[in-house]
Amino acid sequence: MKASQFKKEIIFPVLLSIFCLFSTASFGFEPSESDSLHTKSETGQVEHISKSGDVDITKVAFEHILDSHYWHFWGEGHDAVALPLPCLVYSNTKGLQFFSSSVFEHGHAEYNGYTLVDEEIITSDPNEKIYDISITKNVVQLLLSSVLIFWIFVSIAKSYKTTGVTSAPKGKQSFFEPLIVFVRDDIAKTNIGSKSEKYLPYLLTVFFLILINNVLGMIPIGANLTGNIAFTLVLSTITLLVTSFSGNKHYWGHIFLPPVPKPLLILMIPLEIIGIFTKPFALMIRLFANMSAGHIIVISLVGLIFIFKTLWVSPIAVAFTLFIDVLECLVAFLQAYIFTMLTSLFIGSAVADHNEDGIHNADDDKITTTH
Amino acid sequence: MTGSIAAIGAGLSAIGAGIGIGLIGGHALEAIARQPEMYTKIQTTMFITAALVEGVALFGVVVALMGLK
Image 1 (cartoon, rainbow over the protein chains, first blue to last red):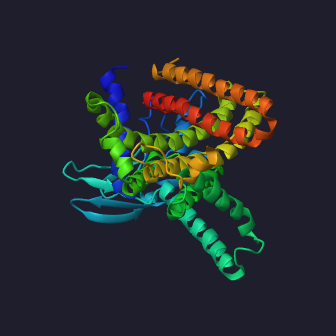
Image 2: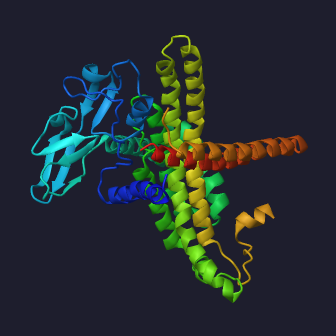
Image 3: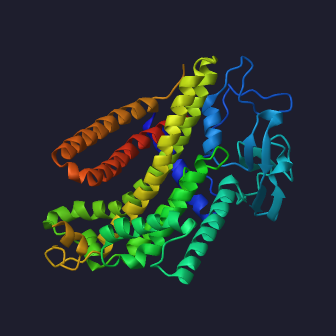
């Protein structure tokens, strides 16, 4: 593979996701062009099964981890049970348009000059520029999980108001209280120190948003929202903004005037500036890659049955799938924890008090407890 | 059999992550054997570090997936 081509293929999804940040639709990757393996049936429906009976696992896996204009539940081809989702298209000639994705009849009907090719709305008019801001599967899951989180935490907050913080927790409260205390004490206080209270609402929001969406994504019909690079990009951008705006003079001093010999500044200042962006970038890729890879592994293990085309491989495939699924339960918690922990670590480094010689002050309880 | 050269890169990153997680696990075992009372703290740190190393392998997987196109 040529270097320029390689570069292009990395830059494209990143640019695309930056674009998606400004549109409300959370599209990540565009699905790959369907290759020769995918045959079209008489109605033009794209099938996963070719004439020889081979199943293209790559295609199936990508369809599961990518965003869609339909919420597909089960079944293939004509037996598929799917919920068509609303499409919102802004066009420079026709203005804002609103229609159901069922008008495309799964990609083989034209509506108002638009066609749906590989989950992308394409216009036939060359002068028209369209922006797809549809309510896609991921957007629906984001809204559903927001409602769920709102319901859970408003009722918990209410019960703290009525019964107080000293009485024993009840119902949902007893499940979530240890998690909230864990985020407060083990994540925020240990990494940020005395100023952690101010950042706790953000850390709790990030932790539970990622955790609940990770868990919802593991349910077979759930959308892979946390494995969508646009979603993780928005979260890590917020972390970047919070870190940058809460940075004190020591933090910025270390970036623009690091305590190194003068000639080294030429090298150090650009590196430190790049460092501001690589930290949230790694956060973005880590969550996206972990969740997407988990989903792909589960699909691939089930797909082994269809690759070997024998029933005898299924006990092994199912056992491994169960194992990976249980592991993914751990990863769902772990990734929420790691994202929150690293966010609080970055905030902690931005707000930490230093003396002129770079030694931490005594009120920095992170240092006093460990040394 | 078709494929992409990026798959080799994914394999190499898996080797790197394998070595990394092996080192973490091995040293965590040593540490627990030396100080069994620190078991929970060492285990938590081990999981975090292992997840961070695993992330690097998954970067490789992402690059390989991009190579599929």
